[in-house]
Image 1: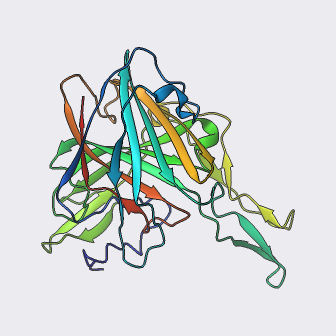
Image 2: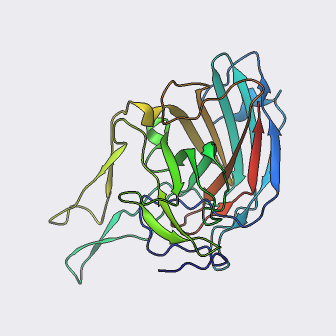
Image 3: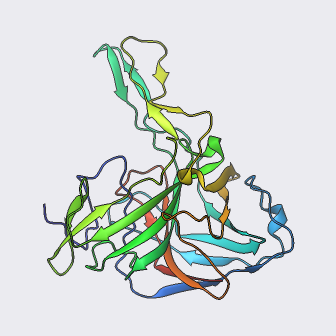
Length: 286
């Protein structure tokens, strides 16, 4: 299947796919300094008053998309051996259910409901020639922190993953066409560790609506490196995230003083994988 780079659509990609795609080339810049006291990861911004915010502009990745988040305010700081992020964005509704099963009396079975969770992903380049446009023809590996209102928030975590864009074939990767006509392979494996959730099916009616995803009681391993908590209130999400500067894991980016890391931010507002608001490239300067 050939993909039009302007349409920015991957209709064949499903649950595990996140598209950080934006055709703009210019970059946003934010500086990450040190603070004396570490914020508490609780979705409350009250302990961030001393840190200035950077407003990152966002635009929808496709003309017909319904995700309409115009910007996200980002604060970031280092305390001790960890980096902390505060991200706030406008959202009229709290969407914290994801594809629950809804009972269909006529069909006498459960069908997937229309509900989609709110999500945020932030990505940091690890190697190669990073670009938020995954179809630019550039190849790279990046670290991705994917927070999900339904499938990770109750765990107090964001799912730690990698994004690999390659010109060489990769097993179980999506095969796409770059803007220059070349073939690229896109893969987004989770880091090593426990599963955050499992899927469940029901053979008979229990309630009118039943969850599709059963959230784990806890999770460990590199996949659980990123602590995160989001709280929705008064038409706005407040999300806090933290991770050690250097986890020692090969599937994580390592941050250090004096370093500049490029990346991007994507927000999903009650929308599917191919419909999100995306930043231009962001330069994170430590």
